[in-house]
Length: 512
Image (tube, rainbow, N blue to C red; front, side):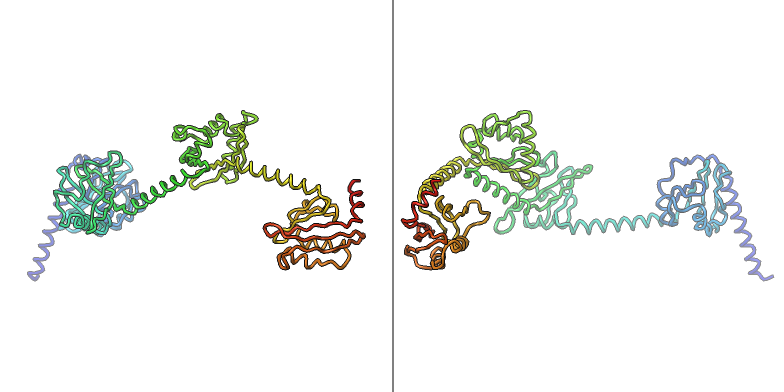
């Protein structure tokens, strides 16, 4: 036999003997030492598996990453298929009937990895001792940590607002790129660890951890505003500075707008009361105090809608309810109508004053009430109506028929003699009676020959302006003279004067 064959056989025999001795040595370990590991306290790191019967119940993060196993989905068979190439002596089923710990060696002697299978009832705990795998898993974790660190750096450097952290001594230990830009812009120098960009640590709001600070920047000394937030994490305080220039500008514009509205409302003679969505008085003007006789301190106390109307009733600045028990229901209906924009009423007070009250909805659930004193307007309207009635009564005493048309040709006035002569009543017409309608009716009741077209043109200001007369005879034989004259505001008055022969008959018929 050749020398090389003998050497190969001897070497193989020696390796097999060494492997057998090592396996016997490991299999003879004290079971008490193996079973001392508690199933309830699995290894924090490393390669660890826990099976519930044949189902994979738990696996360490390292084990999941290396073997692509998912607890709750994989089982003993899928796990064994991944391990069988390296550990061929793995049992086909969990060793549920073998108490203690079963140690399974790797296929090759130079591979020092072992699997320790510990059985506790229906649970099988498996722990792999493999320095190479643990080192590889740790390297993978380090790569993940480095990637996460790179992502965090990239996110912090692209954040538009400044972020920095300060230790207990007040020294800046870290800052992002936006902080450096802000520091250069405000202090014209690189960031100083002993001098933060804002001195706000002792002046932050204790409840919100926030403070609004202003700075002077740029050659023109423009004032910039920032909201600085502070969050303490252990011994480190992290600051965030957010640019709020747009917010400050909008707040200033809103404040100026409110002041302008307040000045405008102060000059109004109409009382204004705006109630917010909670039903409390949010804004009022001085005219409201004069119209309601409510004290300023009561209105400044932001009363509710019900208390506001209650005090108005007590001051007799609104009509007294007929039934006080239904008063609250009536006020609720008033509020509901104002919310829909339907409320508008005229209040006649005991003092003789008349108020017009309107309710209008406002944005965000607010309600506005406008109270206007229209006593003078009502008095003027009443006086005007009385004068009209007086003029009408006066004109009705005339025997001559009178009718007045406006510059647009619409009939605006006629007396009783006109209605009796022509048998017309324009006041009961649904539509405006025009000169064309009237001429058509006159022509129907009169004999041909009258200058009706010229009369129409005169009323509509198309013809001559001087007064003129036109004789006319009705189909009944009554003759009268028609006088057309211009009066104020471009109006035209037409007077129908009967002939002397016909007058007694007309008077006799009217006396009947």
